Length: 358
Image 1 (cartoon, rainbow, N blue to C red):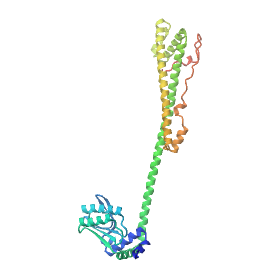
Image 2: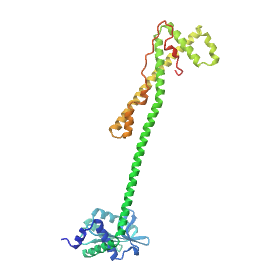
Image 3: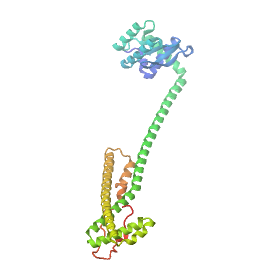
Image 4: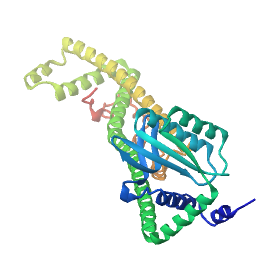
């Protein structure tokens, strides 16, 4: 049946129950700050930190007190006793006293551990059961003391709460800054990759165009009659020699109509044909690589988009550049103009000359 102790505790919060009981019992036993006692004293044990309700240093060790005004929580209390045993064994705790209130529930495992601690550390560990009348008197005394120092207690609690809010705000700021930095890094990487692609695309397209022109000229030369082909090859060889020959070699081209020079021109033309074929093969490989790059890029971004791992900025950039930058300057092979058989050899294709980088 509820008694006066239960009645007064019902009107209090859990924080007030423990605070008033601790303040009242400490005042009754003379455990005051003036005598060196400190509330919520923390020690480091081999099993982890232990926070004592009230404590005072004694030489190199500490004398601690733990007070329970109501029902004892089994899991938390066993952990406290586990750490306190480590402190007693190491000498960090010189003495320890536990106080519980008569009639309040104490789990069997906790009661057994309290008895074991008293047995294992005689004279150093003591469990005291406070009567309900003494506990009631302690709570009323603690409530009176708290009312006298209410402003101090409120300032302390408010300050602690404010510090907690400030720490939480700082943590949130750090997290947001890290998220913004990560998004910015991804956007920068995407932009750099796009820029490199745009810068390299014209060069790749130009090489592909030249390779296609060389291949088309070689194909056209193979379809031209033999006499016309020899003349075209000679003209191509002359233009190449004019562009790449050293000045001291210009005189040699005056004998281009003799038989020996014609044979050399033919060999050069065959070499040019082989080079054109190789250039065409290289161009086809480059185009295939570019297509594979497009497919891999689109597949990667599609996978990231489906998994929701693309930010809005990355997704807009991707959608705005759905085609790889290189694709913007790629050209399909064009059909070179045909050469009239037996013509003058002044068609559009002949005026272009042979590329310098065949």
